[in-house]
Length: 270
Ligand SMILES: C[S@@+](CC[C@H](N)C(=O)[O-])C[C@H]1O[C@@H](n2cnc3c(N)ncnc32)[C@H](O)[C@@H]1O
Image 1 (cartoon, rainbow, N blue to C red):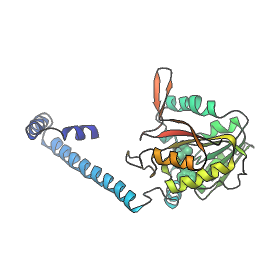
Image 2 (image 1 turned 120 degrees about the vertical axis):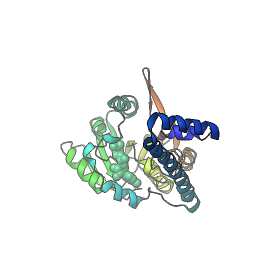
Image 3 (image 1 turned 60 degrees about the vertical axis):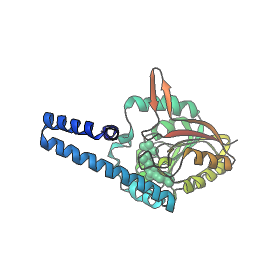
Image 4 (image 1 turned 90 degrees about the vertical axis):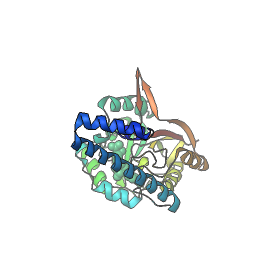
């Protein structure tokens, strides 16, 4: 529907009136009045969104992505759907596990997952890992995962401050996995996490991170990070961008990483 609103803006007045006449003739006055309301409301909400993003950049506001807001939101999230409310289709999820996760997480790895939530990816990571550590700033998520994966003796879960990897030893980790988490973390906290990546990853170790790319301008309550800013931070930390992609091919199907021009970046510690 947003496309329709945007596309109508380019029409000259005469054509707009003709479209309006036809709409009223075919749908009646009440439907057409509601449509008018929808058009007006959409324009106002789009303008408000752009204004919010600009204000955020100009004044350095955290938006909804501060550590305290993230903790508040996720501690009180209804986790009944187990995170699958963000899974567009079972085919997409299976393909992500088969084509992105499994080829990059070798069996026998020491794995750290940041922001496991209700364990949507955890169940695929634990069987590959010799040692798995799930770290989340939400106590609710940690308690949920600890109960759900209690029988897996190679797995431990703990809370953090939202930008650190407590209890993870220097140079001990092969793989860091984080999906649908860094999309909600602002650049200042990403920088602190990258410093932690450099500390905990073994030489040759990798971090597979799903993140936003447009500083929130594509919607989806994204963080203030752009790809260019993220890459600059990675390089400044002495880490390297090994891979960066927004979609992948699986047979004849092309899957998108996320809804809001998101990407996955694989960060390597040289
Ligand atoms: C959208 S959920 C995704 C959960 C899970 N990764 C999934 O894909 O189903 C976001 C998760 O990230 C966690 N989170 C948000 N900000 C965080 C931060 N700064 N550090 C660690 N975890 C964070 C939340 O508590 C929540 O578990």
